[in-house]
Image (cartoon, rainbow, N blue to C red):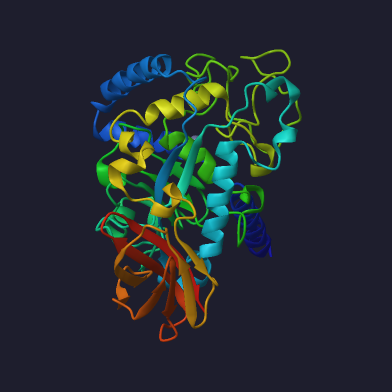
Amino acid sequence: MKIVVKILSLLVLLFAAFAAHAQNPVRCATKEKFKEALAKNPAIAAQREALEQFTQEQILRANSTTDTSIYTIPVIVHVVYHSFDAAAQNISDSQIQSQMDAINEDFARLNADTSTTPLAFQSVAVDTKIRFQLTNKDPNGNPSSGIERISTAKNNVGSDDSLYYIAPAWDRTCYYNVWVCNIDGGNTLGFSYLPGTVVADHDGTVVDYKAFGRIGNLFPSFNKGRTFTHEAGHFLNLLHTWGDSPSCIPDDDVSDTPLESDASTGCPTFPLTDVCTTSAPGVMFMNYMNYVDDNCMNLFTAGQRDRMRAALYLAPRDKLRDRSLCNVLSIQETKPKALRIYPNPVEKIVFITIPADFKVQQIAIYNILGQVVMQSINSTQNDNLLNLDISSLSPGMYFLRIVSNQQELQERFIKN
Ligand SMILES: [Zn+2]
């Protein structure tokens, strides 16, 4: 009988531990990944010091009041899913798009919860003028949806370096590589490598599939896409607001985030003070680089903006800020309304308006794998209007590319 009671007690304890684990994954393993990288290559410490000096100099060089340009970073999302759990782990295009919407709202300070930023911090909460866009070209120049899906028989694929062999990084100088996978069974939400700390094929961000996006099967406390917002901050050289140190200094090397001794978790009541900031308004627990729940974080500061933008002036991140250097972002993005397709979605005949001075040389339609499915299509051109019969295509997403003697235009459409 006693044995039965002990076994039952053990089961209760195990269940409680499982429940606690299931509810409280570690928000971020970036610090641990940095320690691992440092152990493998001690020279990283000196590299980081040099990078920090450059960062401070670049912040002084850049004039944040006149530099209003927006940097749009090309993103490739590698969805790496366990073949026996594809229904859950192979997340939908819609879920990925919900994540892109979330991170862009957060970085633009267009998030719906800006009003919950305490008045004392409103003046430093800013639009970073950094955006993220799924790439529409692969490294060979072919059309891409910006999403790559790879099945693996390995479970917990993000827990070791096998992830990078299963889903190799695209050229990190032209793409921000983001892997979405089951990292370690729900213990960790995500991690990034700080600039200058890792080999090229590991560089980027890893996010658990249950913490990516705002729709789908997500951890209840981490369902607003802010794991990626937080990790993109690390990718662009932001540290945690407490500087990963229990002492008040070192802090995060950002002057407008108050000193802080440790992470804040859950959803604290404002104001929250600690040994480093002892009076109101207290620590900035609602900063994206803290550890609170998704629905309690809502701001980046001006100092963090300047630091992230400085990270985009130093290799290997410097080409990411200027699409013309790699040409991996949508052409229509830089030339809005140049090419218009309607109806979209389409069933049989698609109408395309093109610029008046555009002399068509080549027309091609690609599928999402980048394969040409129609080329030199029979079409009729009437001034700046083209009609194409695409009724032979299977339902799905396609890319139309039109080339003239001077310019190339591209647009995506859905065939019903
Ligand atoms: Zn972190």
